[in-house]
Length: 136
Image (tube, rainbow, N blue to C red; front, side, top):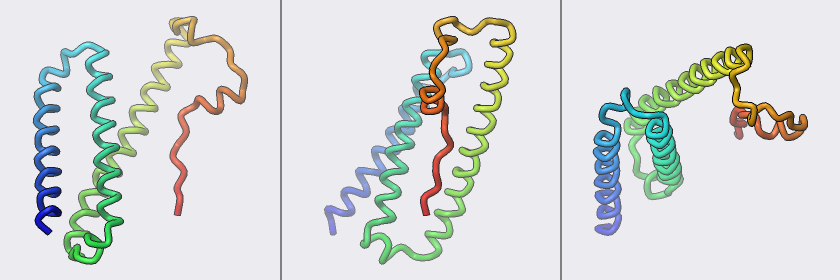
């Protein structure tokens, strides 16, 4: 069991270090250039993906599922649902604002011509941002 505890402690330490690194990297983000903001966002998404995958694996582990108290699961869901709904709201808001911005650029004929090359309908369908499919 000591190896199990060591893994948990190492995970917690890495997560704290990652948080500290991001907090340092994002200082004055309001004044950052576009590349820095894109990089911060992409790195944050990558870390969230890894964390979500690890959390999902955690909840598949029989050692965890057998011993996790119901109260901890309620607490987990309570916090997870807030993150979940905030992420969906963020996606809706961000995508809507960008769609509006792009329409204004198109109306002003300000879209970079390299991105206006006509593509076939099939290619367009596969390149569009698609909502995730729910699998039950």
